[in-house]
Image 1 (spheres, rainbow over the protein chains, first blue to last red):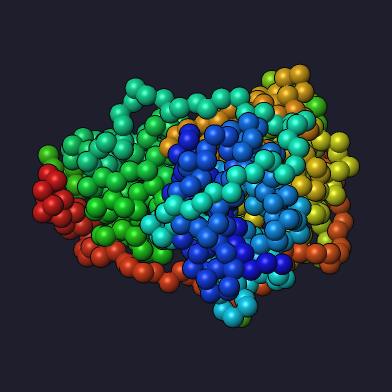
Image 2 (cartoon, rainbow over the protein chains, first blue to last red; image 1 turned 90 degrees about the vertical axis):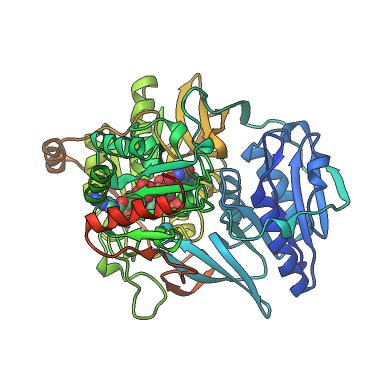
Length: 318
Length: 255
Ligand SMILES: Cc1cc2nc3c(=O)[nH]c(=O)nc-3n(C[C@H](O)[C@H](O)[C@H](O)COP(=O)(O)OP(=O)(O)OC[C@H]3O[C@@H](n4cnc5c(N)ncnc54)[C@H](O)[C@@H]3O)c2cc1C
Ligand SMILES: Nc1ncnc2c1ncn2[C@@H]1O[C@H](COP(=O)(O)O)[C@@H](O)[C@H]1O
């Protein structure tokens, strides 16, 4: 086992995702404490330039046409082979669409413990201590992986982006395992539908969550948005239910917004939602659950019923 | 085509979550268990695939608190054909790795062509079971999927990325899919139908009892997260709050 820390970085549509830098910055700090190296690992095709943007102690860039787009089967095999050859003490993945497909698979394949949803990592002597945000952010679990080598998936926004940005010589290698005969084939990338309003360009948003209760009640949010000259955004359950178009979804698998006003009606504040809105200038949350995680992030809050507040606001605004 | 859906009972997040006396886990006696919301989507997706391409749907879960029958009956009412529960001297707790082993062993006997799981559950401290099943069964995995179509032994899948981007993939069967959302919102099963099914349905039981390798993660402490900040809570009734919110928005020059 080496004292190195692997960071499996990711690119989406040719651009390095911030989570990659966030992890590299943290890995550097941990590696420095344990006398190892923070090794950024990038997989792709013709992406040496992107691979050279990390402040890691070393960067391995695996170049192969089969890695041009994310493919969990191909990426998994490559990361498994690299980890087997270089025995990192810790392998970090983003808690993202890509990282989630690889981490648990590798955990079983390589027989390494995995801690998911991590938003804090530290070294206590020889032990690695990770805090996992479980139950949609309602509980924090402090964990120590057993054995010499572990895997974590890290929540976006947990660590600083700047600490991981820099420039480092890249060791470019060919795929360490054959990548033919894959059962998984990437077909194409589908870009978000245009045509609806662009919530990322709005100054004011009224965001509705599951607390709104039914499709008919969405109208109340629309009226309120109109009175405030704002647009309506939503959490995932609302767009999944088809009550609002997908283009209105804020969060991990939706859009990231940063409006001057984010007024929230019945959204609990799960990490996947927070990821998309926590940098808004003014966040006001209306949620009847006083323990809702959103109150740790919002600037102003109330536990009054959203319908009562929304209706009272409408009356005052008329 | 054999379609298998793995479903999971998890503590309801609508309940107040309390920690046990040792401070190492939830106090499971104090919470209700509900079906993981993404499993509703996985069940719907399974039934949609069956309706479009034929086959049979088997729903399987680990019965941690001996209350899984209700959700299995509901799944049958929605169009699943068979229900299986893994039973034993079990306790709720957080160890996806152990459950993944049990499930993989059970699914090995089912000759599955496509295995659907929820993309994740809120209590998966040691990771999601979907990719673990794929590793045990030596099948490919694709997660965060919002649509599955199957034709000629190839599944066409849509995988969500950040920023509203979506990757289209073609994967040959058999495979494991982590379902984020079904192609259509989940259907509703009338209570009367569920009740009727409950009277006649036979749920197959698979007994497990082992202490093989688990998560290998030591949970030292569980507690509500230490908040770094807290919202300024607005006092008064709804009207007072409404007035104050409007005043704040005006103060910022946003109205
Ligand atoms: C891979 C992945 C990606 C995801 N991507 C996203 C994403 O992009 N965006 C996203 O939002 N989620 C995403 N999620 C889902 C996320 O985990 C949560 O499930 C979701 O954010 C919860 O939405 P919510 O807050 O509206 O619902 P809930 O968590 O159900 O919260 C509803 C809230 O409404 C409150 N409420 C109920 N009634 C009232 C009332 N009358 N008045 C006031 N308050 C009331 C309740 O107290 C509760 O807190 C993703 C999940 C996964 C696994
Ligand atoms: N004990 C279990 N029994 C059956 N299915 C499970 C179990 N645990 C997890 N799953 C499946 O894996 C998905 C993701 O849950 P998790 O692995 O906890 O993130 C769930 O939505 C289920 O489809």
